[in-house]
Length: 282
Length: 127
Image (cartoon, rainbow over all chains, first blue to last red; front, side):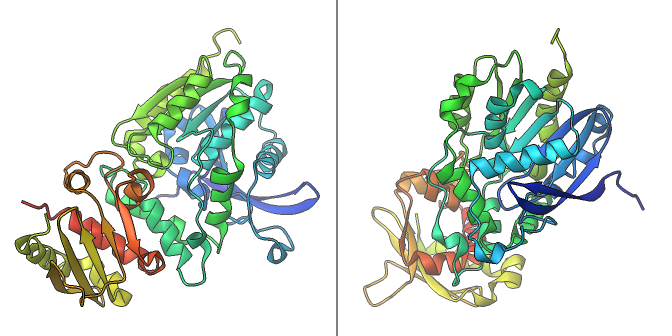
């Protein structure tokens, strides 16, 4: 028997006049590392990171479920509103959790929609950040939204899970890619679609990339070779727009590195976590 | 590409797949595979590939199908597969020459079993 060191709790907070009950979990101590899950998923995707002593010995790793996801409730009155995540609401929720937990100059790591929004965080709050690590980061990703993601004649849980299973690399361990499938199958109706709305319709981070000063806020970008949602070329375009950013294309990796193949992913992640801790006179 | 010999191998492989036996109960559908010069139809009943029809005539109907050039199919069958050609969803999004034709609603209703069938199909490499 083994008890994992991860501890989960609930946070009650107000964001833009709405009350939220938000689940977060954490492990470790040190520099705050705030982790953002992918569309339609939840913080369980970071379980390997939160149980890796090489990470938790240096970082306080915190991951939370966005409202509507995992163990975080939707806000009251959710049945009267179609869930469509926007850049503005996404930024506000992350900053509210960050402030509520008093995370001092955190590193923010996000994947997919999280990998997109970290670019906006770096533009808006760079003086309050140590750095960002963008996994599968794109500044503009049209073409993903489709009506079948929330359709009465289609099992949305199975479609979303199968679609995202396909986003994993062929080389990733079957048990890990299936675990991600299982997490995705549990999304509430329309939640994955509402997140994809942000990613593929509302989000355009391109105009703000030039505002990111990597002398103030470090930027590391890691993207999987097999990611067809955020292709390596899309991340190369982001990197080219942020002078001083670091970028690695991970061979044999797909769209969900932290959950689909953590042993391989950590080889790429560790140098970036060390880079974030290096103060180099800042 | 879709020879009688290949279709026989595919039928044997698919009908021995333990996952399809778990998830295929509602997978009753006919679908086509096409290239520039070939076409075949696969007819499934409750997850079992019960009939394959090479070069079907017009009286063999199907709900949907995948059409691509021989070059695209060859990349799909390669091992390891080239990125963007490694999965039907990747190709539907990023390979313009890979086309889902017919009723896409029926295809997506069967997304899980269809995806599994195409995963197994990819392991039966044409000679």
